[in-house]
Image 1 (cartoon, rainbow, N blue to C red):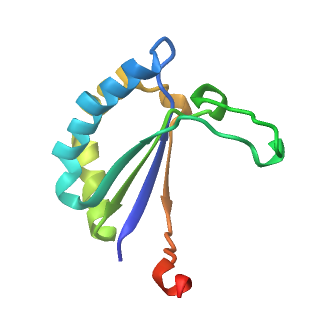
Image 2: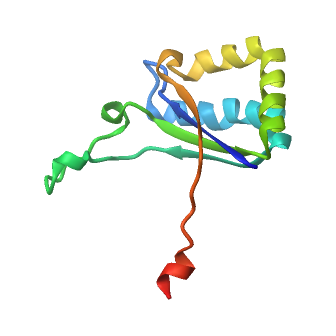
Length: 128
């Protein structure tokens, strides 16, 4: 059964959103694909633009990544639990290099990784 992993990341203090995105796209994500891509069914990075709290009502409040708390939310889907275990093994073997690159781009103490169960809506069936 596929396993989805969601990674919420905050850029390192002192980096502009543009510098962060450039580093994530051209360094960290390239390392991830090289090390783990063969284990993944999908990989995407979502750069947060603006948000609004549910309690804001009709107030046209725009909140950017600094107020939201994260700059990007990445998702990758692994084939199964064995792929997740293999990813952990590879990450352990490359721990120093991964952490060194993370330190260039991320506020590591404010980043979070979670696994998630995904339920997909069959929109074609509900539209009929």
